[in-house]
Image 1: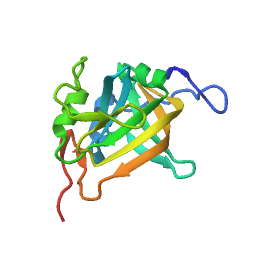
Image 2: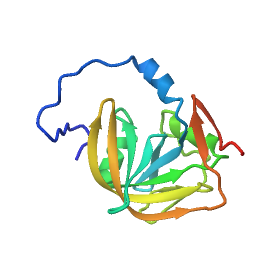
Image 3: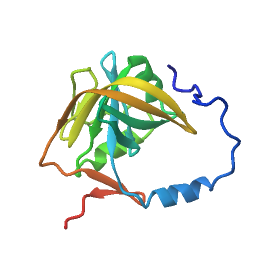
Length: 176
């Protein structure tokens, strides 16, 4: 698996009908609040990762999750080669972690507190939850690749609120 193959279950893809402009889609999709995750992988002790709000539980049996990565992500080929990854669901006070992993460059983990998890991938200290996954499948998703992962281990902190992304801003869960 490379993450750049095209798979169409019924043969060739349908003819495109047309679509909205990317800026409009970004604005409208931004009306839907999401959690924020740090997708991490280790390679020979070096940490790689990216921030993602495109994460979802996919199936309970088998236990599958999905996450999307830009085709241009430098972490994507490392993740594919490793065959596994960790999803760190960020806590409300971890906007700085999100911003660090969202930037370009090799110094994304400078100043971040993390330790290798069971698969050797970074578990970020203070995260609301962790999911360790083996790579299950890759699917095309336009300018992104959709990774599905088989969850081999998971842990959640009951008393830690999640970080949210809404209309281009990061913040805590609103109080009731």
